[in-house]
Image 1 (cartoon, rainbow, N blue to C red):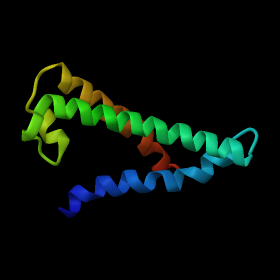
Image 2: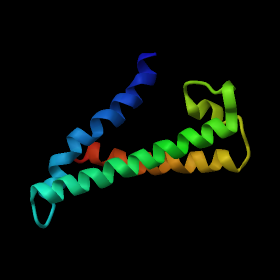
Image 3: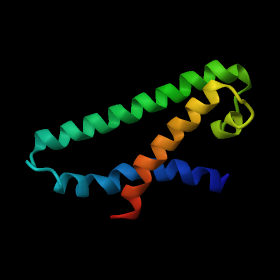
Length: 101
């Protein structure tokens, strides 16, 4: 249970550690621009999470497990590959901020 919670903590605290380096790299540092990039980033994450939720419910119905990736590896249809691509996109755009701060 502890190891499976690490990915959740990694995603949850990733924004906090990436905020100030991103803010410092803005051309015009202002409150408005900081809030704008924050809103765009959170909106992007929201859209990805909603896509994962709807595709998962559509694919697995009430037989879904807590770890979505366990469900994905059992299915060899197009939905499985879409979910894998979404997870790849999330991890490839999120993880570098953690390692380079």
